[in-house]
Image (cartoon, rainbow, N blue to C red; front, side, top):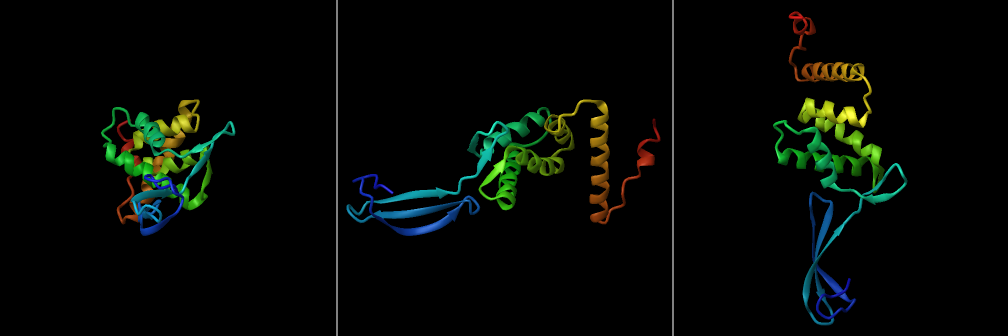
Length: 169
């Protein structure tokens, strides 16, 4: 690490602490040559391998932009999108380490997005899973309903009665 004042390579760490929920380490350093103090931030890099083989650094902003398109016209706050992107990154780091296939990021987005907004989930899933027909949407909606019923049972609530939902048709 070069000192920003004298460009010396010799410094000592005065203080260290984790930041960004443990994703980075902030270090306060002191140059042993000129005694200037400076701060460095060390981050673990999460690399994404795209379909074409190109590797790039993971970007929360890309996750947010992709999910924003699915949420267009929906009442989803920006803070919720930031939390979702953070949750996706944490999930990927926990399950895949420092390198992940781009496809896995889409998979990691699906569950938190379904919990956030079901319509946005359907929009995102339709592109991500390459829906081709109305039947693809119907299958995904059935899956959503089944997941919702299981979630209600886990919460101790009664499962919604699908017979009542279709009675008006």
